[in-house]
Length: 529
Image 1 (cartoon, helix red, strand yellow):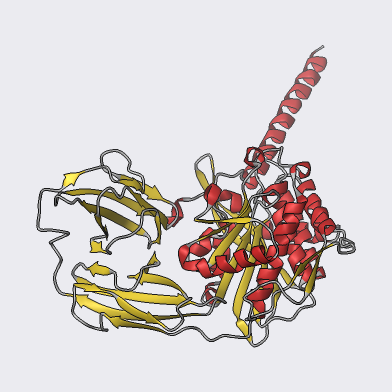
Image 2 (image 1 turned 30 degrees about the vertical axis):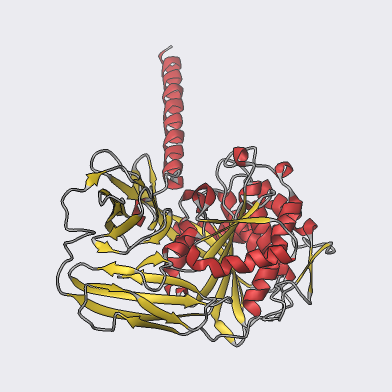
């Protein structure tokens, strides 16, 4: 309680010191999208005024706090400042504390962090939520590019859109603890399980103050990537797109882990300054931040303004519900052919699997769910549960002459036991497709041919991939890897302020005791004379 009271007092003190006169006259612009227009353009009709001076001022203020690691006092200063800016833009702003486990020299202790949340309530689709997020913590330095500029862009989007009304609700969230394993975003998801089913899209902004902007996505969330790519195209801003997360990921990753659609806006370059004292404001290209903000504001306007909440229809026609089957070609139909598909097998996401793919199952009860999302984020699904009455023992052919080969490149193999530990459930499966026919097995279940470098979102626990490659001569090369998915492995190593305070007190007491000893010794010597 004392720690929380102290934290609240610090926030209150520094909130009072935040400068409120931040905004100047707008100087840059982007066109807002019109929804479902005939020319299929996101940028049309409304002129958004983007102020690069605002972005620079906020970035400079955050960088001036210095390192903003999750358990540092500068983190509290920055949180109060961001909340103040959110309130200025009309958002319902709040500081959300969360607890997490940290360690100091191997000893674990309970720590506290702060997420800053601003909410803009929607209209007829208010229960559908769009998130724009950016982490405000930094490590090793002032974090100008990583990620003060990203927070500034997010807050500038809030300012630009403050007088617009939306049908969907928009959350603006500044996460802490990204640099220590996405602690803040994982905590927010855990604290708001009641909202996760309603989240349509997450847009994470991290490391954008340079050219070569990139949109990171997963194939099953390609519809969201397409919105941002189209905005960039309409605005004539060059961007690249890539599957997965360059540079190890950011706060969009925990949303992927929980099957929530998300993309990351980032850039390539200046990596040598990341997490160092050299990540300073003079290294930044604010024209790139302005361009990223233009893409953000048009895309978020598009997502939040739609009044169409009707999802496509999904129908699994085979296997039939409650059927007894162990091998089949999965058949499903989607009413909207432009929809993005995601397939779940026993609650694990296999990503995009086309209709007609061949499956072979292990003995027991299994569930398949097919989810389809249209171009504006409306999602529907169909599922089927069936029972396999006996194990499939054939694999590809009834043969015991498989040739062991190093086919699998990822998950990585560790020694002869071929095991590796993952602290995320997003697993890239990469293998050498060396022959004409390839069949993949996941935990004993045959899932047909999967393209190399496919991404899975798996459940926690032990998993095994097997690959069987068949050559023209009938020979079969095989390989397998076993790995453990455990999201609880990440426990950050941080200074324990309570322990530090205790050590400082003990040091002072030691110094006091030494001084008292010498004082008494001198007095004793004088009295002896």
